[in-house]
Image (cartoon, rainbow, N blue to C red; front, side):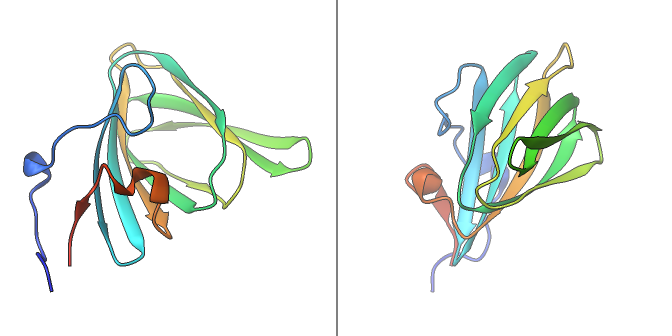
Amino acid sequence: MGKLYVSMNKIPWTNASGLGGVRQQIVYADDVMIQKVEVLNPTYLSFHRHIETQVSFVINGVMEISVEKGTDQFEKFRCSSGDVFYIPPNALHDAKILSPDGASWLSFYSPLRISYKKYAYKLG
C-alpha cells in the first residue's frame, strides 16, 4: 500500500481543465478524487458534462451555477463560501465566477475523473 497522507501544500498546481486563469490541485485514491480549484478573476467556465458524480464545497467567492435537470430544463443558483452543490453524472453544467477576486472550491468526484488522473497525486 502506498501513502495514506499528503499535505495539499505539497501538491503541485496544474491546469487539468485547460481553462485560462484556472489552477487545480488533485488527489485520488481507489475510486474517489478530490480537486481544489482556484479561479483568480471573474470568468465564465463554459457548459460541459462528465460521467462522474460531482459534489463541491465553496471555500470562498461567489459563483452562479447552471445545471441540467432534464431536456431543455436547467436549475440556476448562486453559491458562496460554505455552500455545497451537486452535479449529477452526465448533467450539462456551467459556472460564472462573479467575485472580483475569483473563487475557490473543493470538488469530489466518484468514480475518478480519468481525464484528470495524469495530473493527480495518488494515495493508497
